[in-house]
Length: 501
Ligand code: KIV
Ligand code: ZN
Image (cartoon, rainbow, N blue to C red; front, side, top):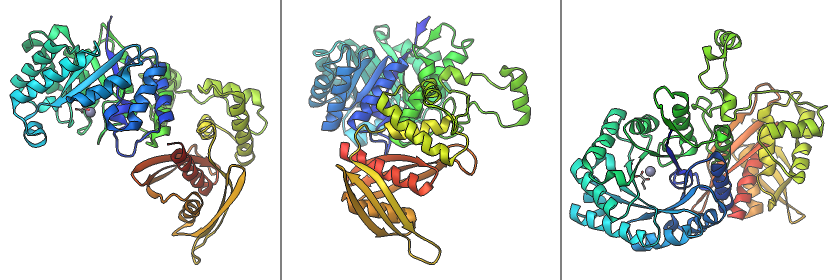
């Protein structure tokens, strides 16, 4: 079997998605999940872009052992120096240099001619090679680059030491057949192409990122760049889970090809990235959407009960989607509770189990049946921050159709209760303003979503929100059977992330 190298760029291109910013600790958490998932390369960040990115790449390089750790750099010495320094602690570092090669980018963005682009590409790859044996080069906007020029650039950078050449469809413009032909053309026209791995990097502007990546694989690409849940710039990148499961499910087409991904960890990684970025996964999203393995129509349910393969091409369990099993309730004990958490993939320490069990008991007073999704929501709430700066003591609201909503919120910081009072456009707005008075942050609400975690009148509500505070975008989540409380908790979660930033 030939291996398709899975290059995960959730922490670089994925984190570039507007509003997806992760703090240091969260980046490490994602990196651990990627290592458990079995990705081959983690693109951990763009070290020159900020001190925070540099520190995160360095911390990941220190603590993640199995995958190659890659840092991105423009074709500029100081970028390469930073990427080299940040990835240095890794067992197997990689430097990824990029430089645009399409006419549009060269003329309007770089204002440089072709010969200068080749010179810069070669110089930067040769420079990076002095410090690191594993060099990837990306001719940015490759899919819109003049073919002959693209071949020349690729040949030159391989000669200078690039071991992987990536062919980005930077603006998500190509389509599967065309992109497949481009990969074939590179194989046929670049004389030294056998000295490098061909990689692909597709954006999803036309919804074709996965299809384009798969077409490239059929035509000889052996590394694919992708992100968990397909997050990334604009419409995102190719989704890791969709590529991996396509190769796995259609072995009749991708015969002789495999990935090293541990499929059972896919769902968990997806939920983690969704939770930390605040990007909710659409219920109908392939592989990891909440409905991906649920059958609603009677005909389908009947078919699946008789023979699963009538309507299922993948088993939810195979990607770690735990099919609803035992339902817990008021009388369930700690043992059953913990067993269920382990099944769902949560390995908590004793303190975390105690906290989560307390929440579970409170919830079971309000809600008869507690499903897996309820458990996930409360556990994710409880284990988010080991030592939150702000904790909710209580809140009170006064609202109605004929009065201006008013809220009093009491938060606990360092053992002390601090109260804030405010009016607002609605009860949630009044609570948020009261919290701002306490924390001193002037936050602008950029996005607010409320979802019922399960069905039924007593369902747990989960709020996901994004706040803008100065130049930072911070996400928060909270859940409760009371939707105002869920919103307040989500807001406090975001405030705690700001404290930890
Ligand atoms: O989309 C793109 O071209 C990129 C490069 C930096 C590889 O992200
Ligand atoms: Zn990209």
